[in-house]
Image (cartoon, rainbow, N blue to C red; front, side, top):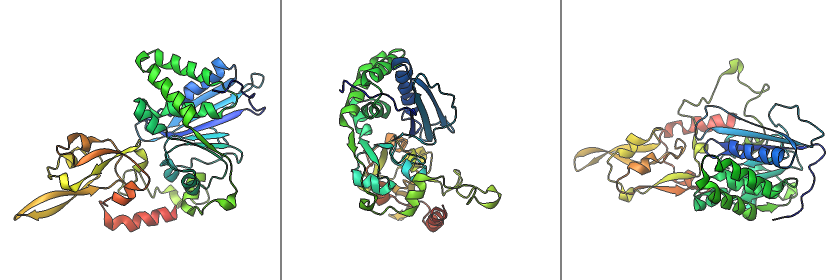
Length: 344
């Protein structure tokens, strides 16, 4: 690891961690702040914002650092970050994760996708860092957050990696000393395996669909375009809701040939993501499973747990898999959903 580190910029340094519940972004922000304040002697602040405090829902964690002679007096969210760390790449589709990111800032993404794919989806031409934090966490039997911390240690020029390792060690040793070493290995792998790409010319970027650009850089609704009367056109409790961003990197894959139509998966699924249809077999009417509507699947794996034949298995989600294998539960509403996205 590097021996020398640069001083913190005169104006300080601000980070925003974009994640979902269950990936440990809040704890990562806490460890980062602890390393900067208690370890490096910086002035710093950390807090997180989230909604229903449940697994899969959006979470933002904010960290600020200043030189000791410039005390922090800010308590609001980080709106112009120097670094944005995206713990779940599906958030590009649903949250304005790039909003306010400085042109000379840095985008860190937990992904196995190539640089061109990320740049096309986000339209980001600045410095880009990629690390397959999920794969590291699965192999080390830990969580995504410590791999992302390792990557951030490589990217922050004013924090010695050893300070973050010490903060990580002290955090886990308090209650779960048995996970200290696996998490340190995860941290070290995140530090080593992060890939950093320099800025590219905007003209070299492949065209980014306009709706993706809007989703990544600005809120869906604002005072200029909000519906009259404050109507919620896409509430979370309707069939138009898309919970695919709730998945923490895995989904249930369905193999029809192994299915015996016992119906246990439909009973176990809390979100009605299992799609079935009535079929007549040997003059008997049965309920046959035909697939999964990944628009409603949050990856809880309850269907996999109850499947007696292995027709449903846990699979690492790859780009395009859900779209290619999705079976629509409400096909007659597809046009309505598409129209809503166009309006957004």
